[in-house]
Structure formats: structure tokens, C-alpha cells
View 1 (tube, rainbow, N blue to C red):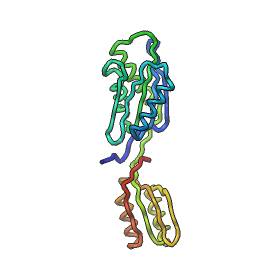
View 2 (spheres, one colour):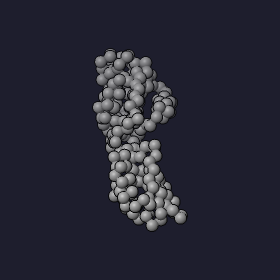
View 3 (cartoon, rainbow, N blue to C red):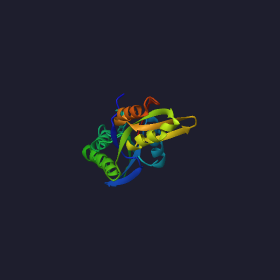
View 4 (cartoon, rainbow, N blue to C red):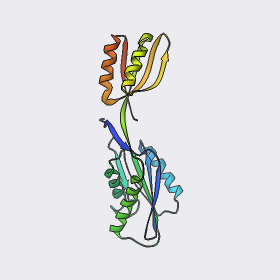
Length: 207
């Protein structure tokens, strides 16, 4: 699976309300990494806004998976409109739920679709969008005297040390930007003169 080197996403939960002809459209944005997380958030939204007549949503994951639902609203008026708002901002690993508390006045298909889009757009536009980079996990093993050299190279590439062990030998678990894996590995190999061992792991994370 090919993952992008960087993504745009909103980490912090945010919520806003848009009132259209007495109906309240409550939009919530969540950061998710899986369908399981989506299920948890939609369940909680239904409990929180138990008096809402519809809980429409859309989400998109970094692996390309996406899903949207009109949740009983006329076809094409809600889920797709929410998804279009997510796409407008180029977001990944993002879920938006719009819960509608009906105010007694029917909007019609056009205005209804506009209300859902604007509600999703508003909550996304008012949230902080972060750019995250793809990191891959690597394991490093070396003699103790190589540690200063290793730490310097990792720091120069803004790598993240997850764990370390210093006994007779040095063992490090690190996160390195996917775009710099080859460069870091080559520098460690060249500088270590065959005394540094690097193993790439099939673990990826966005930071």
C-alpha cells in the first residue's frame, strides 16, 4: 500500500451549529484512523444529540477508504455534500458528522443540500488544519562508542527516538521520515564503518 508522504488533517475535536429555518445543523469534526473509530464517534453523537432526526456523515482515511451517508435525508443532499467539504480542504483521516434537529420547516432538496455542505464547511474552516509527515520505524543496533554519531545523524534529520537501551551494545527504536529513510540509512552505514546495523520495520505513522 502506497501512503502519501504528507497529509492534511484536523486533530482536535471541533463543533459548530448552523441554524437554517429553525432547524439546527450541528457539525462535529473528528480525527480517525479506522472504521472502528468512526463507529464509536457516530454512536456517541447519536447519544449526545438524541433529539436529532438525522445523523449524516462522511469520512476519508489516508488509505483511500471513504464512506458517506444521508441517514434518511433525500438521496445526495447530505453525505455526499459533507464529503465534498472534506475534499475541498484536502483532508485525510477525517470524519464529519452533521446532526440535524428538525425545526418544523421543510427546506427542499436544494436548500437542504446547501445547509449540509455549509455546516460541514463551517466546522472545518473554523478548525486548525495540520500538515503531518509520514514516518517509518527503524531499529538500530551498534557498539556503545557509536551512540554519539547515531544521535547526531538522527537529530539532523529530525527523527524521533521511541525507545533506547544501553548495555554492552546500543539498541534504538526510531521513527524516520519516509522521504529520508534511504539518506539516514546510508549516512549511518557510511559513518559506522559496518559497526551499525539498521533494520526497517513495516510500521508507519503520521507525525
